[in-house]
Length: 234
Ligand code: C5J
Image (cartoon, rainbow, N blue to C red; front, side, top):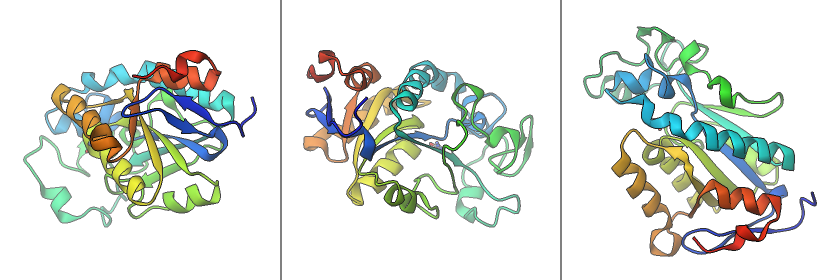
């Protein structure tokens, strides 16, 4: 494939054009701690099953981006073992069954190096794909994500992962403020709350694309494959 040729995806609020050579696929926090029982997500009282529907479509997108030679970047939310990078407010907030750093079935909750902190097997990073460890919800805060995008010549992001209204939204807002154009793949992002999923996606594309664009993965895959289905408005 000629990576220099701009492609167009049928998206909301209007078609999203991108050059695969200057676009990164960003896979946010597809960690056991959010997607499997016994982790951080469940400790907050959430039904982790809600997020698992993202896995299959995201796996197809990840495979296609790898074949196309696009930059792929993964993120993981989590903290140092001494929790020195975890603000007290984040540690103490709410009344979860178990707090960040407490022992759980997958190791200490949301702590780097523990089993629960790692990315699920189905979407595991390939050798050489950068993994950004972030203490916050956004990928830019207290990480080298921004420098990585600059060094790879990235101008646009295709954003996937969990959760739609928290880490996906925060990252898209951070990216938008820094001048990156973001396409969020609607079936490759997930929320524990169906109403937040719907509203979260609508907020991104509202007001003429206040934070970015949204499209189903089918439209993005069609664009990558160079078929006419890619430019059908959605
Ligand atoms: C949350 C995230 N939901 N990855 N983190 O706390 O969205």
